[in-house]
Amino acid sequence: MLGTQESPLRVAIIGAGPSGFYAAGHLLKNKQHPELAVEVDLFDKLPTPFGLVRAGVAPDHPKIKSVTRVFEKTAADPRFRFFGGVELGKHVTREELLQHYHAVIYTFGTSTDRRLWIDGEELPGSGSATDFVAWYNGHPDAADLEFDLSAARAVVVGNGNVAIDVARMLLLPREELAGTDTADHAIDAIDAAGVTEVQILGRRGPAQAAFTNPELLELGEMTDTDVIVDPADLELDEHSLAALDQTGEATARKNVDILREYAARPTTGASKRIVLRFFVSPVRIEGDDKVERIVLERNELVADGGALRAKGTGEEEVLETGLVFRAVGYRGEPLAGIPFDERRALIRNEDGRVLDDAGSHLHGEYTAGWIKRGPSGVIGTNKKCAHDTVDGLLHDLTAKRMNAPKDPSRDGIDALLHERVTELVEWQGWQAIDAAEVAAGEPQGRPRVKLVTYDGLNEAARGAGTTA
Image 1 (cartoon, rainbow, N blue to C red):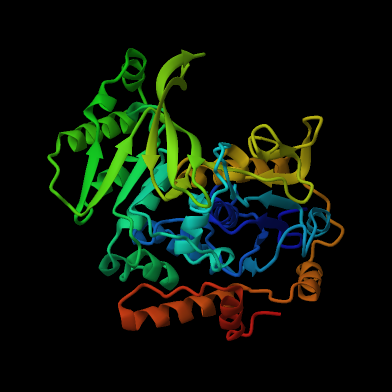
Image 2: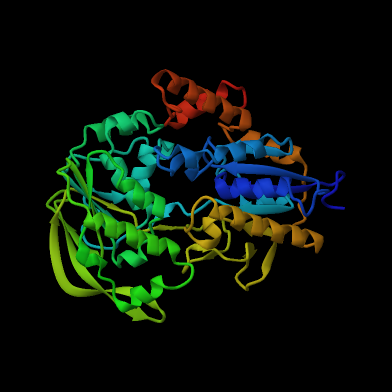
């Protein structure tokens, strides 16, 4: 019987970020199924685990990164294995996974940034917050990126936490960055930057902003930095006021209160400024051979089917700037033939069960995290999302709706991986990378100095004897 010691349930999880680890942990320690015999293999295309906890969370937020301790406990379970450096569709196909596992859970996230689709977006000096965040966090795919940070004013388009992170990182002094795990190349570049003002642009109003309260409050605590909010932007329309009164809008109400406090603050003459603007959308970016200005259109809010959307008024404004980052969200990309909903840019699924084109559940295939539901929420949001998917999987196990692999043994997938993956990093290899980074950081009083290239990461992993 599947799920017993004689025939353990074999599960592959593709994507070693929070959703992947939460799914693995819920499988390995499931209170509703304590007798379940299960083995979990967690794959990632990077040599390193933890996804956006390592490569997305701002370096000056170490408390958020501490969630990795929970994931390390999961990894210590002998029924768990990590395979880094494995790319689905390149080293192993979806069909091959289904030949070796009773179930596969796709948790590889939504890694592509959404675009503005305006003229001038391709000019040098215009880029994605996704790339900038990866660059300052030491993601190996971003190691060779270069950003011209010489402009006095930077503009970030977007009204979420990523926009706030980018603004804050651009203005943090070297002494504050120096105590973090910010990539060395980014510390040097930000220290030499000319940016003294960052304008954060939202197309709708303060009541619709996607900031969370702690991140918004943090701006007001920055050294030598004034936070500027136009009081006129806080004169809310009747629709926004009604929305704020709804149950579940506590975060939005608190955001508006924080913004009102910022608007009432006298300026201090600080050397740096963060300007939070609302009701504006970029129309085009202009410049001869690089970004020189951005043209904005003033918006008004109109009710549309129960929601409030921004509608342009035709009133335009020109803002001089040499640096524009878009931070308007992420989208998923189709991968390895997994059924994909092009409109929503997510894996086609129902409650985490992958669906075929006809809407039928594909036995043994599941999804969790952003690629399941969209890029929303905080790290902890993925816990419930992953648990819900695993609960559905275990329900299907009871109902005998699992995949039937040809070779569910560990040896079968091991042989395939060692044959195809030149630099296969297992958990001991990651521990060697981790130890090398932490050791490099100790003399500088930093949590770690990140290895930022594939060569450097794989060389450190080889020191543990766990790369093939």
